[in-house]
Image (cartoon, rainbow, N blue to C red; front, side, top):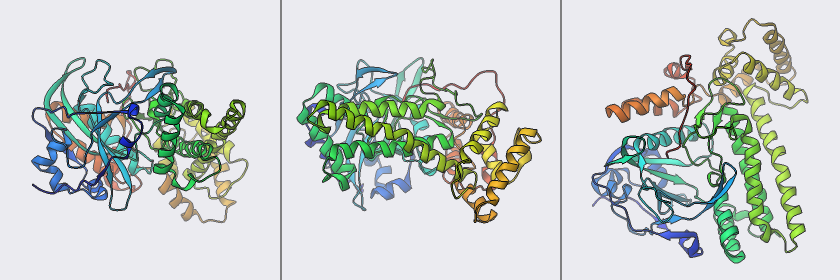
Length: 485
């Protein structure tokens, strides 16, 4: 047997038993490895050859449990489109926490691995398309420099699953700093004891925020640090035009990583009201609403922590409100700094925000491609913008050039800053769909592999990325994405 390199610990099992359910594996008929992330495996201290072997595929399919693993499904709750409900890992199994050669601890989860006590009548399985979609976009997010869960492997199960039609089954191996969510705290706050809540908070501090565990009010510090991480994360989404699609509280991690890649997508034409998710009928999670919904979710996290913030209920509420009130300021600071970088601006001036809003208003009015507009500005290809030649653009461009002239840094330095801040490519929705269709209908994974290669270095601005930077052909049918991961 080839050594696979697992180095498991199972610290989550030392939390109150109500927070998880241990599981027996749900075997699949004939697992086959479709795609494997060699560089991530190496980083995790895993043996790629071992995991690609028959024995390794058996582990990644849930057919065999490796030494040191204690499989479990996590319990959590959450507000889904504003309504609170009991949830949990309905089709995922945490096989263990891998301790990497660098001493980091990450969750290894099999997604689509079968029924759990939290399946709520579902089959616990996943289809190939959504699992490949998560692999593509999560790895693209990582390459863009955005904290995200990652994907180690996707394999087919040799079995079909029934959704609207019969689809090939698949399992994704997901890697996360942890799967502790806002919804995890909501679950304990609603269904557990105060001591359970304290145990979860202390565990989270030890795992993700060890530097603040000795703070005078460590639970307030926990709230503040989560707010800081989420403010930075959401700003990064907005800066690249990413739309989550289901920003429910169970899809917001305490670690500050993006999680869940169901109906997510990247915006082509700039419009703050852009919605892709088929179930987001009222636009609750539209692109422009994401910062507000993040604040709303964090308020639910703060509510869960109230018993730990202070013995006096009123003082606890005041501490929570003060912390939450910082989110908008922190988010705006990150977003504004990022937009300055996208325009090659190094220092700060009061009128910068009006310069940025002027540009965005033009982009909305003329239905400009978000990514390609900044790319054209980066390389001074003004004729590639849809508003080139308009009086509005000439006025804005003059203001921008004057702004650049008022800073000490050279134009070459500004362009390099813009190159590093404006991706040449994003996972264009039509390109992702093209890759998924080839994989699902033809068994051709080369289209996806080429796409992954192009997306692996989005700031390279290399010639081979040119075709992948093109927006889709005009269509009368709006692009829609669906839950299913």
